[in-house]
Length: 520
Ligand code: UN1
Image 1: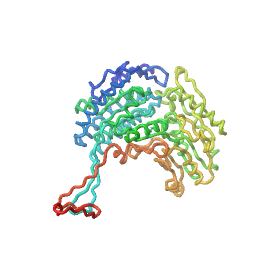
Image 2: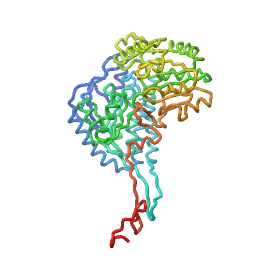
Image 3: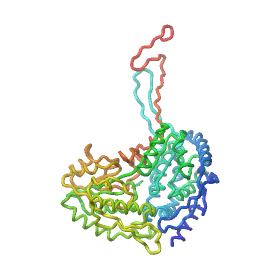
């Protein structure tokens, strides 16, 4: 079944058995790259899907030249016209939703419905960006000087580097690329080497739109190794902004390298997201949110629920219900309709999960469910696991870490203030949630002494954020905000303009600086 799906999806998205790893957006924009071959294997079965000839350093330079030329033209196009381009991209994405979603499933192992959901997230951000293209507003200020006018305007930044992770290979591209595009930037996309085909598919989807508007050099792609492509990109002073999604370790490296040349970085890194479950909440809702948050995408979202901080009085009841629900989760081929959890991305992720559980037990935790390797008949090469439930204490070093796998730590509390303190007592600060029917508990959680995360939800889980809000988090999550709200400002440079339309040259702050014979 998988082979047939692979063939039809690749055909539909214009992917060949062997592909090039650099493109400047148009259908003729592919560069005949000459680097090492990279094979994309499906985590579902471990079988190869297709391969890519990666880009070399000189391929990188060629793409940068095209990006630079692309920017010179694109920046002068009125923003609403750029919005029109993104509107056309949204139309293609609607047409290709099924195929692109299936490819995301093939390359990441996330279930079908989540693959489709990821393309929907792209469509949503495209629609949002179209509206935004008429709303790149600046403020006007009242000048302290007579016959003066002051305002600010937002200019495009230039070339924006986008580095993405395997778990959202398409949506995170769209958050960055489509908003940057309406802002008048051009982008250089470096996808995860675990999901290069989704990146190639995106290029193929948008190529007819790029051709129609003659904007080669706006949506650039580069697939290559760190020495050939990754490091040159981070160190390139022609790239004023690098937007990077991935682990905290990766983010620290990006931040350091980009800061060394005083470039800007926009970081969306690890999370260690918790749900606080209070005594008086709707426990069934809390249970459903926990299941999607901890098991969805096999625990491989940066927003995945990793900790449950639950009131002692209801802990046993909740745990019983949770285990019962975990027993019913269908694990296996993510292409099948009734599967709820697919494989982990690779055997390294599986090994990391097993290692983390072992470490947790050594540190005093109790494994109460799952945490085993699974062999699915016919898919023996896939890294399947049973999701784990572990009773633990918040201060255990392993609980303080983000393990990118479905491990859920259960932590008890007696007083809400303690729950909030434990909640915040981790290095990461992405997403958070409380389940409660008490307005007081809710407001404490949302107050200045409440959750310290970038996202704080009430009676909603930690994952599955809508695109309309700003997305990102504090502390080791990196501080960046992407997607909705005013995250677009990251992709532009602000300019303050003061205009004197009078006959005098008064100085601000009342400074007198008169030179005889020159001033009035
Ligand atoms: C990520 O895991 O990097 O909120 C992004 C969510 C999705 C995005 C996750 N909308 O779970």
